[in-house]
Length: 121
Image (cartoon, rainbow, N blue to C red; front, side, top):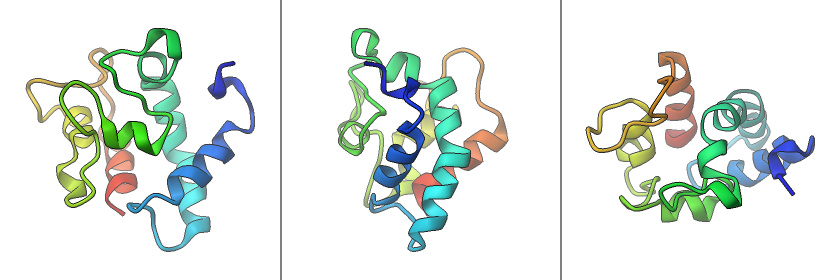
């Protein structure tokens, strides 16, 4: 079953990610922000390679907090101690020469800002 095709997935993921330590203190606002802003970016630009079981690339999964903390071949995607230094943010901002994601169709500055806010707030 593909979890991103289920219409309840944005709500479930929003609850899951809003409870993460990098989530904002206002849980309702965090959930709404994730569902409205973050989830569409992850679904459109990341899930195909880093969410589907049969196509998982780089041993990196975005569908759980554990997957983000574990990361892939280059290490954890999120740095809980220093969120601004997270590999996830380096890769989507193209500031890491070894890892630039997505490799085609670079995210807009606004999309990078959304992911940065999500990780650092």
